[in-house]
Length: 567
Image (cartoon, rainbow, N blue to C red; front, side):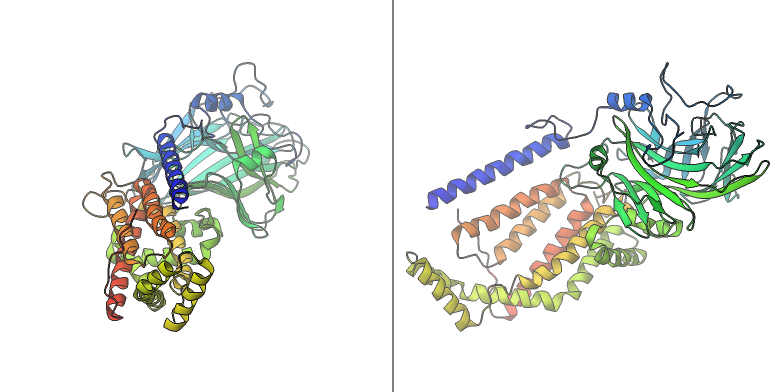
């Protein structure tokens, strides 16, 4: 029987090693052992999708007359929306710079096609971070225009006027796009960027230059390819894709795969909320003022391009009259305090999942510790210490139960040896020992189970917080969001995990005893690819747990001893 168990154990262990090696291959951009596990399209496919054009809004989501194209320039021979007379000005790209942003606009539609964050470094540390981008390998743009007639859209070439740089002492930079008259309507789009801000007010002025009333609808959309992020980890998962928020349905993410299958759920009609594109650490969003009726939509618009947006119907505009509607556009890092000021609920793009109720207070406490310590690494350690102190008496009960288990372990092992051929009698005698010694075998598990949600919430806080990007801790750790370049922290984490395992009482069952050692080792492998901040949190938790366990064992007269594995 033992030989069969040993064989099964080695099969599981060997398969785990194969799976880990497979993930290592994918992590380094090499072909997976079992075929490709990535759904990312090749850059060439992305470029082809971008050039192929796409509908701006699904037919099911809006009225007819929607622009037939969106995205990059259509290839020769492709159909484009009718734009009236030939453009009087050439199409061009203009770049403007604030103190935190470098932005590129396309005069075709006044669309925002590139956002570069001057205070955020790229993952390769050689340049600044780019979120929106329209290039050979990527498509991620923000567009707006009018539907409901032959009106200016994001395919209409406009005239641009803008200061190219936020001047010294100025608090605002304005970029203005004016369309030619089209269908009796002229559209003026004005972006206003403030110093230090990642959001802009976008005013759409619709002028009726015709002789009859018009009732256009304003659409706002974000268009993005479905490719995975460059350098995305294979050992932990973060969400990339569209999201929406309304008072009725609250925040909800929309998977690209659900859009592919036509199963995406989104509120069709609302008078509040926003639409967004979310990825690890960063997001973009269109926001309309509360009270403005809007229709939300999301769809796949070509082979590898997806859009999420809103359509706002406007009241009839009389001849010679002008109607204005303001929207907010955000593209930046997921800093909770900043997101809360842009729009209600926008901070939820930093998604903690079902543990948000625990994660948000932990994040607040972490930021408070940072303001005192001025170092995110020390703040993480201080936060773990604070949680340990808060749970000290609860965890002490668990360790006391484990100490009692360790004290009676010799008696249990001797009993198991006597009744090894009679499992039923062995179980009865074991329960008798527990009753006589007043030991609850589950007493060490219950306090730990209560704490697990808190530490999982803290895990998501550290994984999701953009403040960790480029934040140094000490010595060789210069970026808490990147893996340890020398693997020192993961090794320390592995050693502390094994030490903690050795201090726990050995399970009576030999197979369980072996698994107690194999599982921490297999689990520790993943930490070699985790962000340093997460590993630092785990090391701190392990060391404090070991110290507490040692102290309680000594106080109860149970000398701490190491239960080494016997394979």
